[in-house]
Length: 114
Image 1 (cartoon, rainbow, N blue to C red):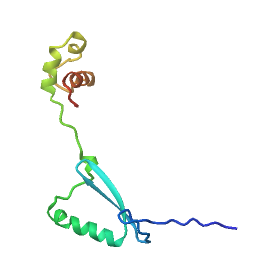
Image 2 (image 1 turned 45 degrees about the horizontal axis):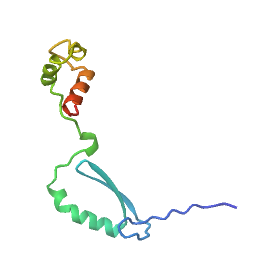
Image 3 (image 1 turned 60 degrees about the horizontal axis):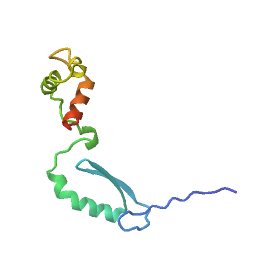
Image 4 (image 1 turned 90 degrees about the vertical axis):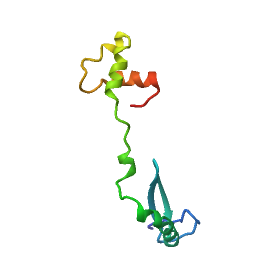
């Protein structure tokens, strides 16, 4: 005797059961969202966003474009040169990448996140 798996699709907005439920993904600010919507609620969703979509710049996946601020190398080097030898000696040059250990010490001392 065989068995069959039946998948039931629910609309997240009104809990209706529908064959045409689709997952809609979107992002606002730094947060990504997904919602399962049937045809009627998808139409409402897109109609509500339409005025904003028409004037928005088209971009890529928001989470892939989030970047930290650039490391202020000159500022960190100057700070490091005033620190005890444990940190000061890690700075070998006034050019190039700042050692990660120095950046970590700077972040800890200054409450930053570079």
